[in-house]
Image (cartoon, rainbow, N blue to C red; front, side):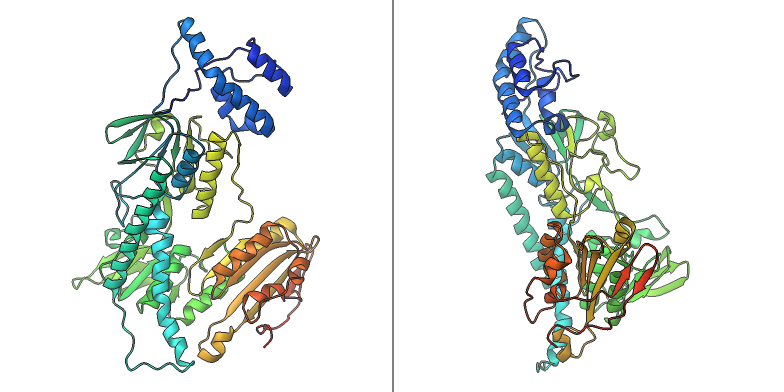
Length: 563
């Protein structure tokens, strides 16, 4: 096992010739109130970030080569000897952020261990699995079910292209579940191997912090210089009469049979995605939302458009309805009572009403880690908690709850701790997608956010029937939108709802992140025939919004380029 030094050992005095020389070379006044502990000094991101990379390297070199001297000096003075840790880093939770932080740290030369609960498709206090929410009960299995559900729409589309079927295609739910679960088993094995190949020790069990440098995993203690918490979140079902009959997103991904008629309570991206999944698999789907629109926080125009498209595909959206009770009938069917009445005959009632950080029974209160009211861990800009040796990344911090963001946070943390390269996660222009049907992709600011922040903006939109729909005969449409700063011509936001939206927006996210202007978009040659070319061929603003007044220019419905 590697050894590391705590924040209280070793200690260097400014009278030390080595440090006198070093501080002189760095031009740091010796009167500065710097920590006497070199290990604390060298692990403080704010201190390190003020130094150049060259100076950080000098400090690190001095720190490494002074360890033996410091230990001997303290031993001679009768002080407590330097503490030896089992690991440089111990990670609790092997989801996206935890795996990334652990693997990168190991690649940087740190000794690392990760603990995770045994695998299960449904999370609990005793089950989890290497890979975490995204891989096992989130992004990946959800996307597999989205693929499965898309076929019914594609079968419909195919008729206009000359395809005929002697019988209606039938879907076998058990085949889908078996193949999905086999893929999850494969993926959790891959995540284990990724960590093992990096030299990370895997510990199966539930981790609990007992002091700032010690983790208890099912009765066995492990010490570490740094502890990272990356336990993610869990679905939340509100307590109403009959809530025991409801399912959450974990269970919805692993049902023994397909719902015949399902009520989905919630208007966020999880609710909208599962509505599309079950609708595509021919279930009768009802969505109940407390607000007037789905997807609060998204661009208003996109919200209206996706709700319209969902309705055209047969999803019934009940607006401004709050659930009050679930009632189970003698025949086993469920009724959902809301403030507006009762809807009967459901085989399943699903709550997609949010997720909460999974911080219970981790020992955080005992060691003094500060948390918010909803249980999220409070961290600074470097992901450090209120306890200097404990860090947190991913959904457990409730910052920007996306898998790629957790990966970014984990990678940044590893650099901060083990590369002497203090790195803040960069939350500017983070793209995201909703795998609704049709899907949504977005990056940058919504129209509403841009008006609030910049005042004067130009809005470019294209709302059109895609080429495939001209022959399929289906009422599918695509909405594409650019939000542009009127003063600088910079593209502030880019939004799309339509087939391949996520794939399209991922590419354009590079342009938005780079700060390109509308002129840069206009100068780019499109790929024809695609929907994506609309983003580089929109020339006339749909409306111009100014601080004092709003000028609207009606450009009409725009057809696909070249049509």
